[in-house]
Length: 307
Image (cartoon, rainbow, N blue to C red; front, side, top):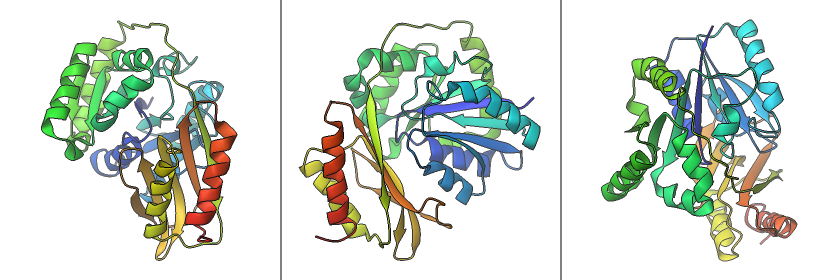
């Protein structure tokens, strides 16, 4: 049987980037299949992983922890039959609940790694403190991400706080520097030890809304992209996350934006089957359709170039 590993974390914590590195560099030449679960209608991360030569199976348009939970066990069985992998890595939606994931019938992981962006740690606790405290308490291994963009004082504070929240957790930095022995040995060992103590408290996570906007027949220049996100902030429409596949001047580009910084772009070798798109996520505050219409107007102005 293959080793089943879960790499989870909030939107934009760096899950896909780390998985791509681990599969291509750390666990090569083992047979690895990545199960990619995105809550948006189109998959950005799956395209990025495939572009790096990674074998990917998509579970899209829903969260594997809730609306798609009935599909997971069957998907894992089909992967075993079709590919005979050495390891399956599941990347749940960034909106997923780890407690719900670990209760899915017929699915028992061998290891769980939670990624925490140190720059957004306080934001998560502000969104819903009880929910995210539970997420951290259920994580046997926590990898701090985006530490290179943060001052040392913040990194140390987040590490200390996580170790106080979950004294049983192994908290590490630099996930890209961890070797095969760590992923295939330390992570399963930590999970086996931790699984005997499974604390669960009742806490409801924040609700999110998302929308996928098609980008058709236009070349997106970096300046227009930066102007778009600047206007999102100006109009108080700023999502917590936005990502997509956009046609640029020199080819297709994967765009990834968090509310804490500038958009990041990476080239894609092939066009996505669905064409260009941008997916945005917001905390649900009841404004739903109003926000979506305003963003659609901004896309027409700032990307399609009518303004």
